[in-house]
Image 1 (cartoon, helix red, strand yellow):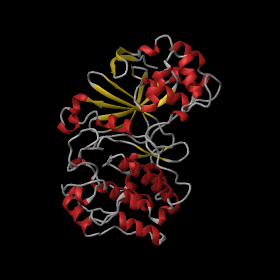
Image 2 (spheres, rainbow, N blue to C red):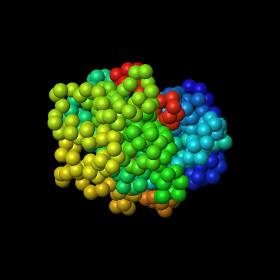
Image 3 (cartoon, rainbow, N blue to C red):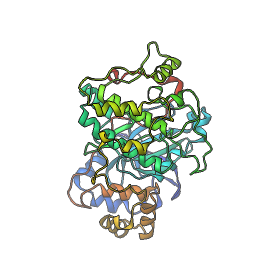
Image 4 (cartoon, helix red, strand yellow):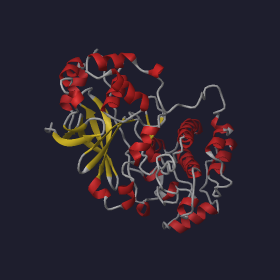
Length: 409
């Protein structure tokens, strides 16, 4: 195993440090002693090239134009995480990315939902910006579709329902994702959707960002016609993208394709509603919803709340529950973890509550959530070993491919 290099890290909650936060001083040895054997083995055997703060940075999982996602290991708990590393030097070449470098982290701290990945920590060095997130053991939905060729209607219904609930939650918070695609849908240990990659998201009017929702961004094959035509647009661009994802799940291909690829020709096909064929076995209700979602006129396309009322999704039942809150209520605090952090790790009670109740991405929040994922503290339980097959990426719009799902590696 390579020796981990330390990087000088600026952590918004702890200031400047090399390799560890002040809170970890004297605590690492205490916690290491409490780690079960499997966790200790993971720590010793984890391949990594450097250490940033409390995280060992390991193998590359995915890569985009300005960012790489690497497998990480939280050194204090032995839990694996996903670490999105944004290269500031490369980002400087794109004014839009540079301007909005920290927006992704800001938006994810606003949001808490079971079908959206949890942001745990944010760190920054001179050349890099790090977003530490939970890992999902089920891999990427793209690979599930590739293996099965296409998903059956019942499985698709489950995933689309969860995607719709996640998007409704975002829109209620004033956030438009703008890059909803199969590659950005991961699966957790219970085979539930986890939405990732908020690099192109926006929430104008909430955080003070001035983007008027006219930026041409995302992947052309999933982008709404009004976005491709450089018109002003709103949250309904996400509704269109849900339709493309639903079509991709049901068929293993994309609804609108042109050969050779031309953005103008693709846009015209969307406007003319020249959708590729659907399997004859699909229910009338599924086809009806698809046509609603893929309505080229945004004025006729339903908003996300209207989509939720569609009978095919079966969301209007007692199991749907009340809207999910973006902040944990104090009654939901895991007191076993809280007690462990305050009595055995030296954290202040108020510090833990503040980070958790406000969903503030910092090392304290990371420790809380990673401990919470263990069944017990300091016992012989097996630790979670998470692997991710997808990646969180920025996309250069002109270079995005319209390749069909089945051609994925």
